[in-house]
Image 1 (cartoon, helix red, strand yellow):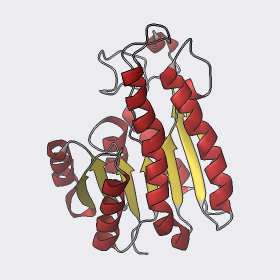
Image 2: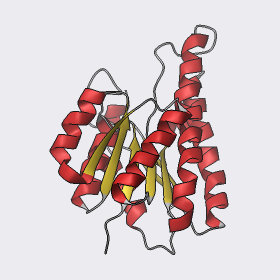
Image 3: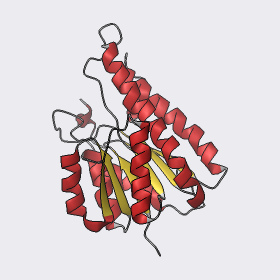
Image 4: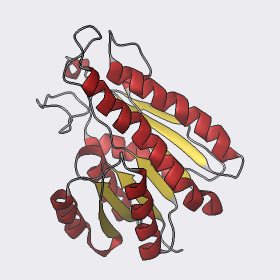
Length: 229
C-alpha cells in the first residue's frame, strides 16, 4: 500500500512536531508547515525523506496554497490535513484586553484554520480525505472573559459543520480537544499536564479509524487535575 501524506500546520514544535514524528513512524509522509524555517529544517532532518519542510505563515492563504501544491508534487497527493497552528492571549478579559492581540488570535485561530480548510479541500475530496483540527477544553466550556476560548468555540462549531459538508463526498473531519498540554504554548512546565504525545495519539487514532467510522471529536483531559492551575 502506498503511504499516505499528511499536511501539518504549526509543525515546528509541541503537538505539531510530535504528531509528525508519530505519523512518520506509522508510515505517513508529512508536510511540515510553520513560520520557523530553522526549526522545520531540524525536524525534517530528524524525520528523513518522508518529511518535507514548508516554511510559511498560516495567516496567508496564498502561502498555504503554495505549500500544499509543493507537498502534493513531492509525494503525489495529500490524504489528510492537521490544522494545528494556534496562539493564545497574554492579556485576558474584555475590559483589560488588547484588541490588537484579539486580532492576531482571530487571524491565526480562526482565519488560519479556514484558509487551511479552503486550500486543502481540492486535495482531500478526490481521495475521500481527512481534516483534523486542534480544538481545546476551552472550546467546550466557558472561560471568564476569554477571547481565546471563544476562538476555540469557533473551531469546534466549524469542525462540526465541515464534517457534515465533507461527509457528502466520503471525507472525514475530527476536532481534537485537549485540556492543558505541557508544550511551549505555556511558559512554565507543570507536572500533571498532558504531553504532546497524548494529543498526537488522538490524531493518529482518528486518522487510523476504519473508513466507515468518522471520529468527530476526541476530548482528552489530564487525569491529574493539579496540572490545571
